[in-house]
Structure formats: C-alpha cells, structure tokens
Length: 539
Image 1 (cartoon, rainbow, N blue to C red):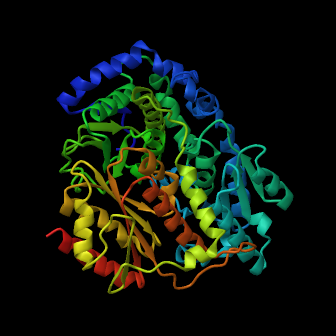
Image 2 (image 1 turned 120 degrees about the horizontal axis):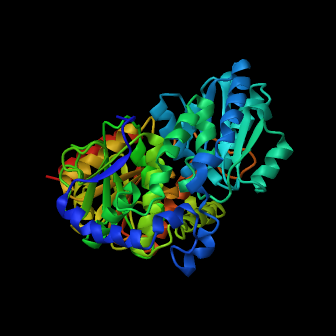
Image 3 (image 1 turned 30 degrees about the horizontal axis):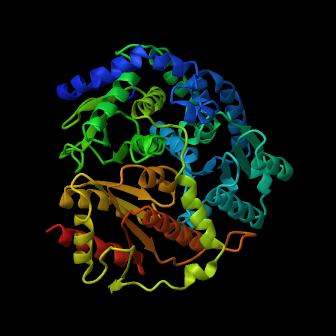
C-alpha cells in the first residue's frame, strides 16, 4: 500500500545480472551524489547549459515548504467566501502532477488539459459561484491554457462575478504571464522555481498549488519526498534510483526500449500517466529513448504478455509478469522516478532536460491557425465507412473497408514496434475510447499506447518524433456539436483542436512516421463502428 517502504526490486534475475554493471558505473562516477548537488556536467558539454538551469527539483522537498502556509491561507479565504470548487487550466507537467496528487488524496479537482469544446463546456457548466480557476503556465503563452483563461474570465464576468478574484496564477518569476497577472489584478500569483522543467515540477508550485487548494495534504507529500531524498543522493548499488535506472538501461541495450507500467495496489491513482511524460519527454530523442506504456493493470495486454521489446514495471508489489517493482508513497516515488530518469539519461547518452521536438508540433498548429483556409479546404477523405472518414499520410493504405484498412495499418508496425492511439476527443464524454488500447494490443500482439490530444503533445509527443522510429500513429478526431469561442482570438476551441491534430500529423509524417486519421462524423456511432472494425481486424 501507499505507506510502505520506498524501494526498487529487480524481480527478474537475468535483468538484475545485466543491470549490475550499469549500476556499478553510476556508483563509480558518483552520479547520484553529483546529481543531488546539482552538477550540470553529468550529461556532457552539449547539455550543460540546459542542465545548469534545470536541477532545482532535487531539493524541492525542502525549498517548497513555504508554499504550505501560503496555499492553506488562500484555501481558507476562498472557503470563507463559499468558493470550494477548483478548476485547473494547465498542460503537461502543470496538470499531470496535480491530477495524480488530487486523485490519490481523494479530493476533487477539475483538470482542463484539453481543447475539446464539449469537455470545456462541461467544466463551465459547474457552479461558477463556487469556482476558482488556477491557471498554470511557465510563460503564459501555452495556447490551450491561455484559451481556458480567456473563456473562464468571460464566463465569470457574464455571471456577474469579479473574474480577477476567481483567477489564481502559477507561473515563473518575470514571465509575461506574471506581468499580465499583476496588470489584471488576479487574486494570487504563485511564482514557481524557474530552474525546474515542467516534467520535473511535481513538487513545485505547479504541482502543489492546485492540489493543495483542492484539499490535498501537500505537507505530507513533501515529507514523503524528504524521507527518501538522502538515500537517492547516495552512491550505492542499493540506491533505488540507481537500481531503476540501471535496469532500464540494461533492458534498453537488450532491445527492450519500452517500459510498461501497471499499478498493483499501491494506493496511488494515475501514477503511470504522470510517469509517462517524465520518461518519454526526457529520454525520447536522437533516435533512442524509453517509451512508457501506461496500462490498466497487471493482467492487461502489453503487461501480462510482454515480449522481449518491453519491461513490465509494477507500481507496488511485484505481480504477474513484472520484472521490476517500485514501492513507496506518492511523494517518495515522484522523487525516485525523477532521479532514475535523470540517471538513465546519463547512461543512454542523452540530455534529459530538453524537448527539441515538442515545439515543432506547436509551430505547425499555429501555422494552420494563421491560415484558416488550410484547415477548411483540401481535406477530402480517401474513404468513408459509415460515420468514419479515413485520411492517411503518404504510403498508408486507405482504401476498402475500415477493418481492412486497420488490419493493414497495424500490420505495418514492426513486430517490436508500437501502435500509438491519439484521441482528440472529450476524455470524459468519450472516455470509452481508452478501451481501444487494450483491444488493439490484444489483437495485434504489439505494444500499444493511448493518449488524449492535445495533452500527449506535451508528453509522449517528444518520443513520437525523437525516439525509436518504429511506431505507427492512429489519430482520432471527431465532429464538434457545439463549439466555443475563444474571446479576443480569431479561432474557436474546435478549430484549435483540429489544427493541433492536423499539425501533429503533419510533423509525424515529415519525420517518416505513418499516420492514419479517422474522423468521426458522429462520435458515438463512429466509436462503435471503430471498435467493431478493430475486433474484425484482429480476427
């Protein structure tokens, strides 16, 4: 359970043997202790300038303590005014960490990391009289988050509520967003440590403010991290981060570049979704890296039947096919996995703190937004099968029945490759779409990932372009029943969502990745047809 001792066990004896030399190398080079003392030279001269401004996360269990009182004071003030519903607008590390913290603590937090108009409309339909929105962005320039801020500010004003009093901001010191917040007179601005990248920001204001305002015990979370910090800084083969990084590196060298993560009763909710960004965005570059595969449980396809290209990792006690188990409470596990990810970056020879391929998809989406005609015209489906329109990148077969198209597409992935399902849909109303991951994995025998768009663009999107080039990409888009305007912007949320899907598909195709896009002209009917086609394709 969540209160157990923090540790890593390499269950598989063969993997443990192969991991030993990697662990010994980390110990001999004193990498753990140097990381804890924020030595920016660990990843080579090319990474040094970036690493020098990205290592403050190693001491957050101490430096974030002043936030505890600040957050509690604001929460008390808001509650005294009858404001007890917390909405979070944030992408990537700004949403994934607070979501897992709040879920694990069992407190209500409405997370907006989407451009789907239906999902945002549902959040708006909540009781605005009781609502505060936390807008989290390092610069303020994140298009999704900026759109959410504009939409909620207008909704508050239209409801006769002082919008500035209901907007709380988390940003970096001196950022354009900090300046805008001061000018607008927003309720409270929390300035995060600027020397921490988004995916390592769980224990900064980005992770703690939304979760703390929702009622999570963030002091306990920091205590959990503090309890393991000294061990993680130790140059020893018993250091759990050294063990985990060494096992990942050994598996990678042996051809297992995928890390399949399942919870086995840890008491932590949604941990794999947070770890997914940390690992994929940190390691997936220069044609290498570790691809995290978040699965539903230890009996799920991809974990229970993992082949030689994947390493099943249990969050909790070892069960079933697990080759590695990682135990401990949430705060400790977050720090442990961050250390392990930075250490494996050293072993893989990559910089774990940059994300060169994330920005390229954002640029492509912005380019499409600046050219609305490109979004509206020139998009004739190759095939229409019921409520599903079929589009494909060059070389992808798109003729015939949907089941035949899918069968050919799945078969085009190498046996040791992967299939990525990318759903630009409503992750609440269209939640059943996530079931496709297991169905496809079971019927194809290939590792299969699932991501909600555009949220995955801020996480696994880096690996998709920069990691091992053995993936095929199934994009799902859907008709928008009722769109939402973005105040003072020349586009709607639906147009933005469409631009993000097309932009990412364009970049993937430019990187030589096969892309099949299925557009559901009726979401419910299209999803039902898609499930049937997947089942038929696997027969």
